[in-house]
Image (cartoon, rainbow, N blue to C red; front, side):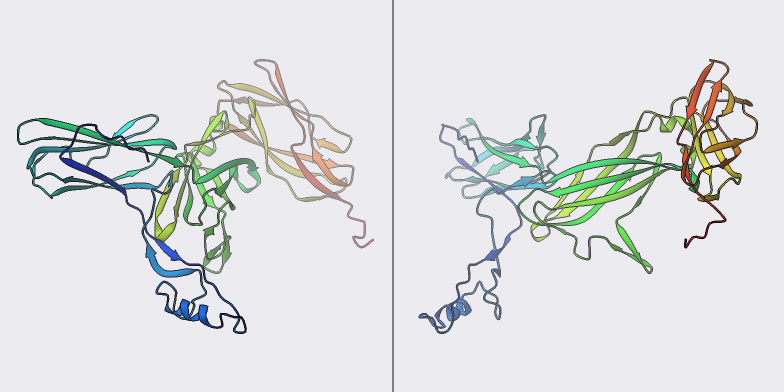
Length: 417
């Protein structure tokens, strides 16, 4: 703590103390066997020690509380509280006392004083007390600037300041990963899975009170951090949600576009705002901290001007027997298209029907469902490929391979052979 005092003799004294929760007193138990030289001396001393727990004297943790002996660590997201006291050490009555407390960060200066009005007078041996609170939202160096101005009995105006420097540390390391999933077969499109890795980088355990995802206006979110068990779901992390120092937890969320946005192709193009994480934890004796990340953004997959996806396909089909699939074609551009569908056979996949079919005009952000029939001449897991769309307005062609996979089996083969 860096303190700069005024050189001139002052009538008032300023004291600043950080307000924090106390800690449980710890002791170092010393024991020995009865056959050792001290005998039961150590045991009797521990039983007489008022800081030990009766019946459990060998436990390191005691029942008493200890006040902090130093400034301690301040972490991002915690509430910084400080007690400010101005005491009149002189035998004079001073007037017009104004106490001001500012917090200087690397980017701004904040006024933390509860009141900016001056106190009329302060008699000898009396004091002015104030408690300030501030939720820390920046890491790095912070300087608490306390300024006191007053007027003496002779009318002289005096002024002095004190500076208290402290560091704000980072309590958590948060990493996020996005996974894009196409779930047209379940009538839900453009699902996004978010994996959040949260690591405790402090030196004390944390109780994770809440880790939630606040989605943007385009998405609904569902948490995947519970295991269904009857009516209530149990947390995947167990009943006691503690995060030990340097331990990491992984949280998973599934985001689905709201119905009014799901059919708009423009939503899935470019950078999409997903939402932000809200993390609440408690440390020593319930001291609370909270962090909110900035808006999380992911680069959505680019589908080009035309997106082709599958709405329906069977899991298993018979060899050389036609089966039906349903494709969905979406115009992701900002212009109207006139589309022609071509079906190209591969070495294993054969399309049934007329190639070069006119699909008609498709306006921007609209889509159409297209039933098709296909058969496979090769057993095993086969990839559906060979579709081609052509926009006759711009003479532009779009090819689609590996649209989906299907398992092809021989109906005459004995599964046990």
